Image (cartoon, rainbow, N blue to C red; front, side, top):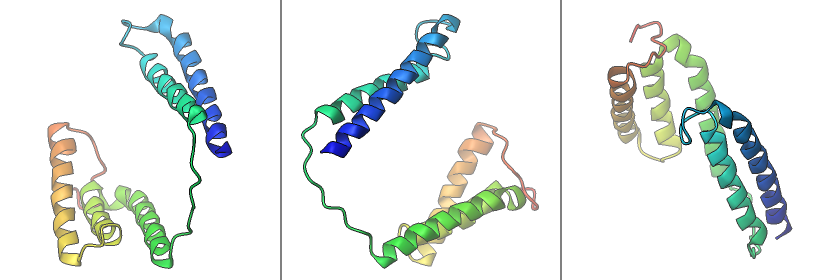
Length: 147
């Protein structure tokens, strides 16, 4: 398929640019596998390899269908919930905003009932709190309620 080949060539080009930048950062390395050059080099190599696979692949024709109204509504609702989360996290705090948005996301994306959505949101928020705030001591917005 023509679009796969074009996408593969773009991937190869971006990968080569990343490898070139990695080579420029290589003199500032700590060791061969530790330093600022590692991530762009690895990402560039993966992009080049996958781009070559796309260029060489014999694609089959794929029929693309526009999603139905419910799927579009769910996608837009999920995006709106994430924007609300982004706006609310500073004011309400990480814990409360995460729990509230997760209830909505579990309901919309997972199609769970409200009770199961609340339960899963509380479990997920507690796990994220335990990992990031308690164990890793990462600073997150505490919000109005200082949680």
